[in-house]
Image 1 (cartoon, one colour):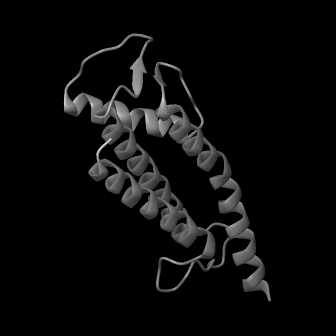
Image 2: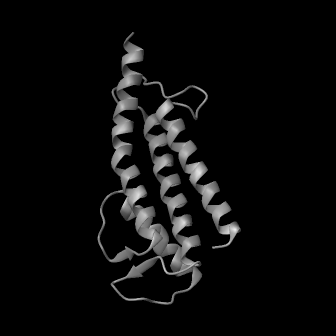
Amino acid sequence: MSWIVWVIIGIVILVLWKSVIDFIKGRGTSRGFGLKDSAFSMELFYALLVLYSTIIIGFALIYFVLSYQGLILVEHGEIRTVSAIETLVHSIYFSGVTLLTIGYGDIVPIGLGRMVALVEALIGYLLPTAFVFRLLTTRSRKEE
């Protein structure tokens, strides 16, 4: 693979990493993630929605870039040649299904894509735990 591909992948990974760390540490807004007078914080909900969207789009870009370096996603067990738009749509779809741990199996990664999908699935599995942890720590700070 050319060095440009690795630079793009590295930038996407840095943005994803920073987004997850900022969410866990409570950064990203000027007021932090303070709970109002309810057990549910719209600010925290929106932050989680933006974080999930960022991760889905980030990993979709990784799949998209890797697809031009070689075959990375196989649809219904057969190799297909599709346009750039279709490749991007498949990448976004596969990324969302993988992050949300649905895993329908209609699009399957091969080669390096398996490792990328594994990392994305792990993030999708751990992110709800980080959300609950963040909610509980914010709530306990407010009670003190």
